[in-house]
Amino acid sequence: MVMDHFLHKRYCHEDGELRSLPSRPHSHLSLVHISGFIGEKDQLELALHILHNAAVLKALKIDPWPRTANPVRARVKSENRLASGRSVALEFLCKDDHRNVVSVLEDVGE
Image 1 (cartoon, rainbow, N blue to C red):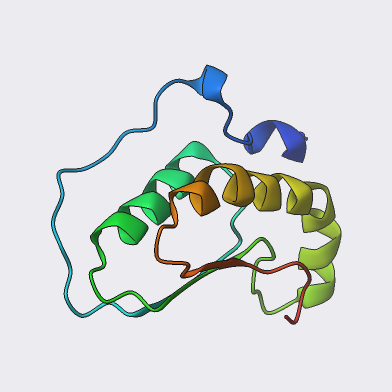
Image 2: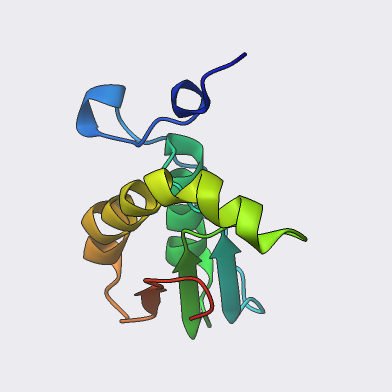
């Protein structure tokens, strides 16, 4: 049996610098909703890339809860990761949000 908490690691500064792709402005992406955000390094890098390159972005919603066909099972498996996803989004993503477009959802169904 694989321990679930070893498969997902919350990003922290000790994990090294965040990678970034070359700037490629996107002129059509205005609404983004990322569900299942648990604060892994690659998730944060993608969200930052969208934030920095979507020129007409109006809203970037970060949702720590995965949206699955079985919400009860997803909730049980995700409760221990909710705080990590929220804290990474608030600590690293919101501080780069100079247009005030990022919102971090707090609970399932928000």
